[in-house]
Length: 481
Figure (cartoon, rainbow, N blue to C red):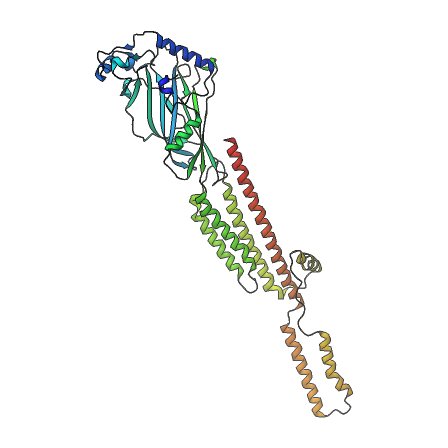
């Protein structure tokens, strides 16, 4: 355990997850070491740093080969703490968490002590290579530390050593990007001895995880894509029979949350705008405007947009983000919309060559489906009624029956009237749309309106489903962390 002088410091709020039996043993050993007068007690000739350093050279302080304990069966208790100073980056493809931390290690040189009045100070800084150093490492370390080397550490007058060093940590992290860009990641720092088992080195927490979180947030300078949400800590007890084969470990869980603003503005909002334009393109009349060319241009623009934004999308071997399904859905809807436009255009342009519309199609689409999509029936015939033409024909035929004396002039005029009536009927035949053609064109309008309604329903349901998945998975990830 740590001395009272160190326990009163802000960083040392107290130890957590320590077994009561271990505490009693450690307290007993500490009291025993303080009460007994050992050969390692330093006596200074004068209260100066030179005199203290000369006295320390004669003690076991500079013996770096073995652990500083009376008996090698006595474990060395090392207290560990750290402060997360900066989040330098998160690489989802390589599954790497890049950070900069300050690590604090505290341990005791058993039996070492001196009188601060006699020696002139209660602590002294000494070169790191002159003391025995614990081989505590971070298991997730993936690369060489590029942080500046710290050459010195402090030794307290009661034998406690405080090692404070900065580490550039490039660590592995198992990341789940399913809810990107609203994802929460959980990266771990596992501290343990590289070589010494639990019967030689035992690790303890200097402070609670909440204190570590608050101190990290207070000194953190990076304000990038990721923000620190929480820090959790855990220590798993080791059975006594496994102390000589297991390593004592302290596990910190670093909970990170992505700031999604950039991805919402650069990915989601433009994609929603493009799918909205495609939705409103159904209001373009296919018989008068080349709607298919407009939709093909829209698909081409969306493809270029996805190619440009491809670097912003994380890709891992574990899973694909849900946003990829969102983009694929938008692209599929645009393609389906284009195919429907091609089909409707083909009906409108080729209706003059089609035969009569089947009766079941008339009943199903022109009656029921047309009313379902709120599309009125085809407009009534605006040309002359056949009864009117019959009346007009009778108008020309009546004088013929009533005329008793047929002169040559009358006969000639009668021939001219018949020719004019035939011409009029031919003109009306060409000007008036054939009833079958009108039915086919009306069928195209009904199908177009039906697909428009299906498009709206499917788009709304799909977007709501994806949104629900996002929210539920986000809450699930947050609860698990």
